[in-house]
Every structure is written in C-alpha cells, then in structure tokens.
Length: 92
Image 1 (tube, rainbow, N blue to C red):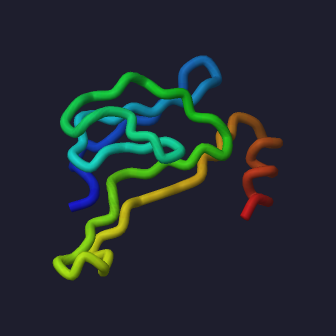
Image 2 (tube, rainbow, N blue to C red):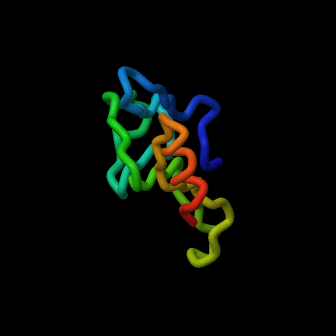
Image 3 (cartoon, one colour):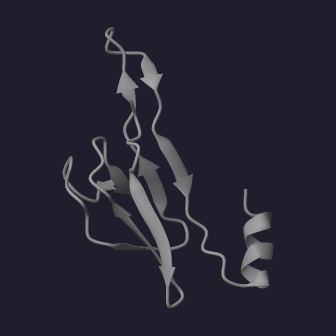
C-alpha cells in the first residue's frame, strides 16, 4: 500500500549518487519535497549526505488517527572510500 512494485531507482554516476521516482503512486520525497506528481517519472535528483529520503506516505486508518502503514524513510550517507565507510559506521 505504501510502496509501488517499482517505486524508485538509485544509481551512481561519476562519483555522484542519483535517485528518481519511477511513476510511483505514493511518491518519493527528498527532505520533504516530492520528486514528481503521482504516476509521473521524476527527473534525476542528486543525493547528498544527510538528505532524508522517504518512499511513500503514512497511510491513516478510518479513524483518521491511527497510522496503519508507515512510509519508509532513511538518512543518506554516500560511501565511496574506506574512510567514508569508517565515518558511516560511527554515525548513529
């Protein structure tokens, strides 16, 4: 209900990480901004460290209070080197 079967794509190109929404129903959000309208493929968006990526939206129950399905959210950490990996392992 929250995620589409094919929701988003993430890839690396020339040392940069990109994401795009691939026509999902409930959207892909970066730092609270939706990448494209429902059912529309977005332009590629460059991800940076500490960006917040959200896939989908919280689905609220019929009581208009209870969250019955939660969005998926994560903070971005781009890892290209051993040093990046070491730093990422130390971040909580």
